[in-house]
Amino acid sequence: MHVATYQPNGNEIAVITTDKGVIRFKFHPNEAPNHVASFIELALQGFYDGTKFHRVEPGFVIQGGDPLSRTDDPRVGSGGPGYLLAAEFNELQHLDGTVSMARATDPNSAGSQFFICLGPQPFLDGQYTVFGQVIEGMDVVRAITPGDVKRSVVIENANQQ
Image 1 (cartoon, rainbow, N blue to C red):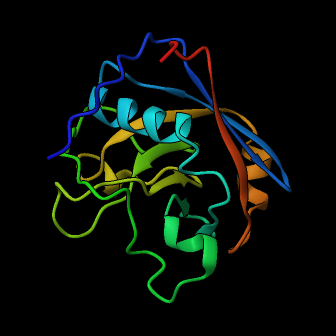
Image 2 (cartoon, rainbow, N blue to C red):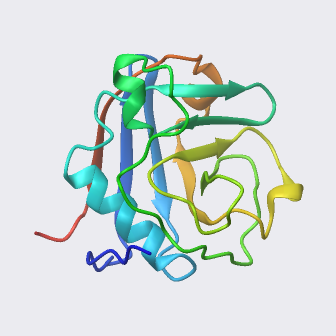
């Protein structure tokens, strides 16, 4: 299992720029420190830039973060950063705008793919690691369609690396 080295300062904000607008979310470093650190590390490396929201389920979630989505690889939905993260299930709920880490059937199989909830999804609570919450741009989240590109994912207030 991968352990990220970035030490969150608690003030970081993710800024996802799409053609439909900007989505901003805060992190929950106390509840999911390794997931937060991994997402920030990947974003600082430009990992998410140019990837697509490959899954859109109206009333449920939008999902992205698969590097295979850059080229419409037929295996889209199965890609990741080359490592896995151990689950950090916590007491945070899957509410409208919750940012959570996608995974396969193994609870310890998260990597780079994440989803944003479109409304409360209580059946996901305790099953997926919640690591963020949208603070601006839910109108953009709701406007996302399959294939929309994340032009950039920037981390505001990040520690100098």
